[in-house]
Every structure is written in structure tokens, then in C-alpha cells.
Image (tube, rainbow, N blue to C red; front, top):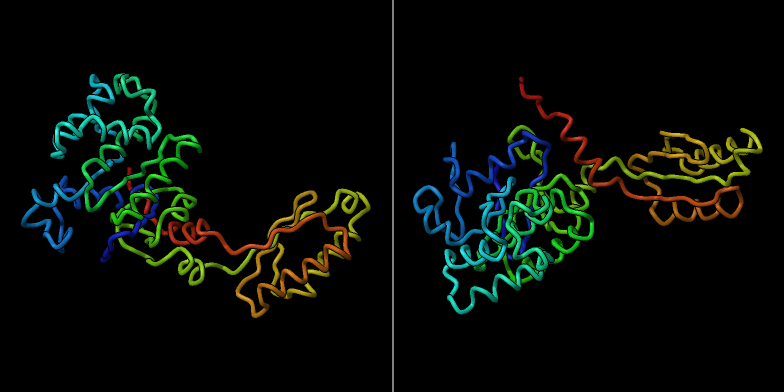
Length: 303
């Protein structure tokens, strides 16, 4: 794997379990030796000066490394002092992070009483402590409810805008689309593709999908009406392949086609006026489908 992450950039590392994401992070943070090659943070080599590198990075590990008997406030205080934050600012910095990540009401509970989601929030707060140049977040939103996820995304976006380099691993395609300016899909310890979300969609997607929702009376009035709609779609968009038919719903896959995006919408608007179509959705193949097309090649480890 070969990659550079600029400042103000969020780089997403995608892959199924066992692809090598956490192993990569362990090498970048000095938990494990680099097997071969080199890595630098801000021009400082990980091989020769790991101590200086540790001063530049923040790390939220996949499994929370918290001290059970300390409260959230005490944990934030200890890490702030370790990070070299002046004593008179320690309390304020901790409270601000707790406020941003929305675990303020739990700050005086012991961390062993925290839910999984709140532990992830605290671990993320520790990674952002002390204004590191580079922040590594290993699946930071595991166990969080949708509202908490959105809040954490907002914090990550704010940090990215402030000039930090962020490296993120995630299983959530939605998360990567929301946060990442560049991402790579990793299979068996190798990058299979790298680029922006839109670049990956353009290069590796299988065209478009079309979902047509028929009016209830259409299916009740017999197969002829449904056949009429199917014939219309095939006549107007010859490349369309019917992938799924269930009750009032038809799903088509449209591979790469010369028909323009706007023309397809025009065809479907006309169909909606003339035929018994209640609604339709026309979209580009999702990042998830691109991800799945690569990760099917992941080796299954021998038990």
C-alpha cells in the first residue's frame, strides 16, 4: 500500500474484517513494527523517531483502552496533562470535548459504567486532545445511535476544516461518503482502488439503478398492465435489465449507457404521466455496491 494524506483531508480505509485496517494502524502508531517500507508523519520517520511521532498523532483504537475505575473527567484530565496542555486550561479543554461529543452528563461516572457508544465518544475525545497533526480513528462510531453518529461526524468535519489530517476506518459506506475526501478499499492487505467517492463510483460502478413503484390497482387489474410498463421501459431504455419484481415494485439495473441522465428522467416522467406508475427512483450505483464487488475476493482465514 502506498498513500499520502494531506492536511485538511480525511482519508477512509475500507475493508471487511481481516483486510488489514487495524494492522495498518498498529504499524502507524508504533504498536507493531513495520514489516517493510517506510512511513512519515510531518516529515518525521516512524522507523527512526517514533517518540517525536507520538507527539504529533492522536489515536482512537478499535477496542477502547480506558481505565475502568477512573471517571470520564479524570481520564480527560490525565490525558490532557500527558499531552502537555497547561494546568490552568486542562479542565476547560476536557469539558469542551465532552460538550462537543455529547457525553457531558456522564462525565463524572466511572468509565466501566459507560455504554459502548459513550466509550467510543470518550476514546475519540482522547484522540483529539492536544491538537495532534494527524488523527487515526479506528471504527469510531461502533455502537453509537444515529444521533450520536451525526454529532461525531460534525466534530470530525470541524477538525478536518481546521487543518488536521484524519485517517478513518469504517464499515459504514454512509460514514465514508459523509466524511472522506479520499478513500481506499483494502482486500487481503492491499489497496484495490483509491480516489474520491465520485471517482470510485464513476470508474467501478455498474451504471444506474431504476426502481419503479406501481399503483396498487395496476397489479390488481392483471398482468397485462404490468407487462405494458415493462415493455415501455425496455423500449425506451434497451439496456435496462429487470433484476427484481416484488408485488408493486420493479427494480432494473442499467449498465453503462449512452442515454443521458436527464433523458432517462424525461422518459420516466412521461411514463409516470401516461402509465399507472405511482413513483420511481433513478440513481447511480452506490459506494456500497462498489465496495462489495471488491471485498468478495477477501480470503477467509483458516480457523
